[in-house]
Image (cartoon, rainbow, N blue to C red; front, side, top):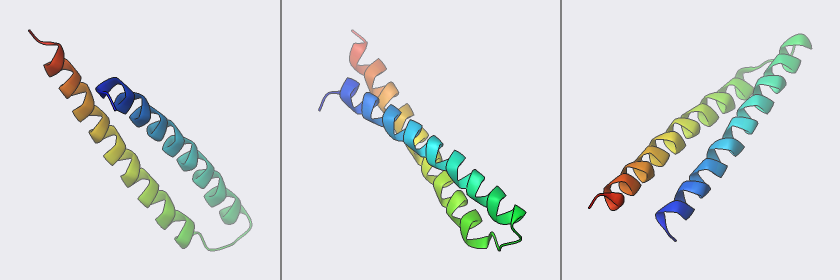
Length: 72
């Protein structure tokens, strides 16, 4: 897989994770409005946010490698 393919994959993972985070926030809101406990949903949100940070960091590594590869 090329660096550009890795970058595209990282972008997809970031977008997917952001969608999951949005959905998880909706779940937390719904549970809160229904008077249900939100501990588990909030824990999952924190895990998703941590994953997003890791994906973004990995994406930056790929971008840095692309820049290095393009230097003469």
